[in-house]
Length: 238
Image (cartoon, rainbow, N blue to C red; front, side):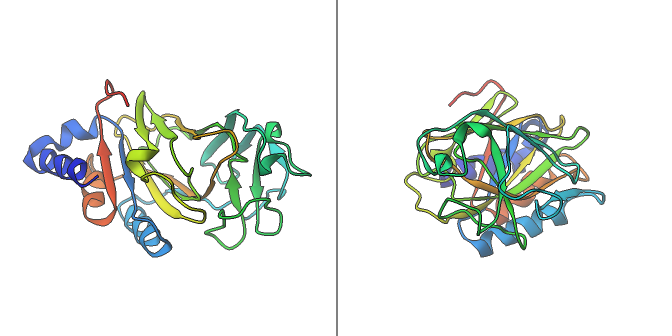
């Protein structure tokens, strides 16, 4: 992991910032609530005014499932593309195939997933694939991810894949929390999250979209504050 971050830093400070910013840049905090909070604070501090955050705490029916959950704050939409099977998502009153759900600690059938904001979070309900479609006109997105898949899985954005093994390491235990921030100066596209198996998932909270003052600002900020930075060309494959 360190070698990847070192290579990215060398390219950027050697004058390659413009090239790096032409492709998606993903920043991952170190594990733990303090590190995740620090990463969120740094991310928000580098955004222009007018950013939007969805906390899932107001206006949602907790425990109700839907194939698509549309942000009431205007962040965008979250869609279950491929349902999970056989896990806690099929525990009454839930069904894996019924879609995503906003949960709280009382309604959740899972251990290890929890709210960052005062009450609720968006749960993947063990979806094997979920897609975040941010509202148009933004270049940066950040969010908390709790209990990310224990092994395998990947993020995919703009034709670029970031494997969970590279990002989080493998065999994570329950209850882990990270802050993920994504930047693309060409405009944010859909971010798809692929699970490692059919009965494992994660929670999302405090999803923020915004813009940064100049190309590359977010990427440079991330080098000193988060656990990992990955930058790959749009032709790269995992």
